[in-house]
Each structure stands twice: as C-alpha cells, then as structure tokens.
Length: 125
Image 1 (cartoon, helix red, strand yellow):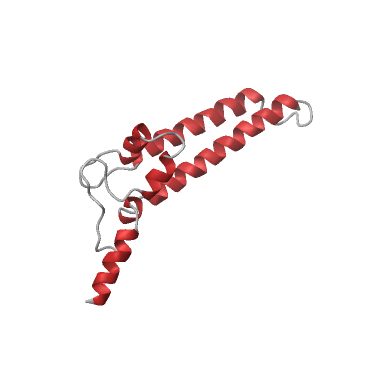
Image 2 (cartoon, rainbow, N blue to C red):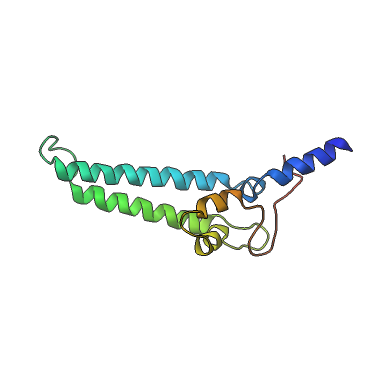
C-alpha cells in the first residue's frame, strides 16, 4: 500500500512532458535554437572579418541558414508537443497564453493538458 501511494506521489511530481514522454521534443527544440544562434554568431563574425577564411560561406548563407533553423525549431515545438488524449498542441497553447519571460518554464512545469486536463499515464515508470 505504501509503495503504491509513494509511486502516485512521485508520478504527481512529474510534469506533463515527463508523463507523456515528450520532454525530448523540447530538448530537440533547444538544440536547434542553439545551432541557430551559433550560425547567427558566425554570420556576425563573417561580416566583421570576410578576408581571413576565403573558403568559408558568406554572411548571407549564415544569416539565412541561422534564421531558418530558428524558425524550424519554433515550428517543431509548436506542432510536435501534443496531448495524446485530445490532440491539443500543448506548446502552442502555452506559447500563446504565457508571457515571453515565462512560457518555457510554464511548458516544462505544466502538470496537465490545457485542453482536456489529461495529466499523463500515471502507471508508467
């Protein structure tokens, strides 16, 4: 009896992303944002020093590629994190309702689907 109540308490501490095994999608988003930032930093470097490495791509390549990667990462997050029960795009619901300063923390800490209230499968380990 104690182990069942303990496992329910531990499960209730887990976020919706953990319960539905979707945290990896946020990790992919963050990795893509980092990659886009590196590409944009390379663009700034290339603008300021275009002669040191003539074989390196130009600033137009870095700016378009970096911007595209960041856009793709936001679209990935927007469409990929979904509720398995009702299909609501959880990330898009959080992104549209939360301030820019707190949306990521809110997404990582949310305990249930904003559409139907589904909290994830409590029996998974």
